[in-house]
Length: 112
Length: 111
Picture 1 (cartoon, rainbow over the protein chains, first blue to last red):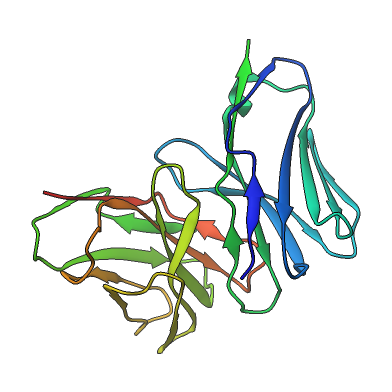
Picture 2: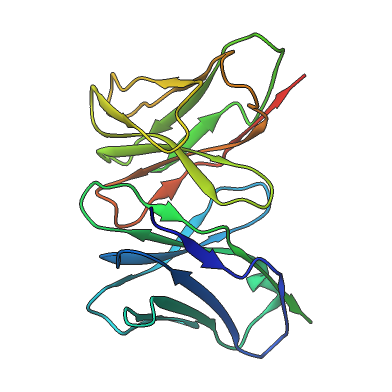
């Protein structure tokens, strides 16, 4: 079965710096890779989706890369702000209606 | 105002009781999902449904049951057979599996 690894340790970063979160996976390469944000006690919120034939995707201060050779995705938040503090989840799916597999998430803390 | 709702926000259950968690969406999405989240763990899929009157087991379906009689609704029943039901339950919907829209969650506690 698919295994997803996200850094289980919290990531602390100074405000204004770039935060980089890692998502590694084993076994099959997914058709899509998604990133979500989750605040404490709330449901995840979709941020970005990147397809297997895309190397990079950007949305405002967010950037996602997808390296199918390394089986890795990197999620970057530039000019980080305290409001970016949350847990970030990556999720992989094969496309179609096959189920999506979520990682355990990485907690990001942006320090003012 | 489109979205996905879950109720109740908090639910307390006595051992041996069945309880039903509600999930409703007005996004006109075909697919709906139920996940369980425990501290320090990722979301684990309980059941999912691609269309009305059809659903499939996820990774941890034992002790749970669902129905999908209407496109908008996908209730989850936590039965007494579920040995460790205390958790945060999340419902989601999607057009396909591109992006999932999540509800606010229901926190279930067994007394």
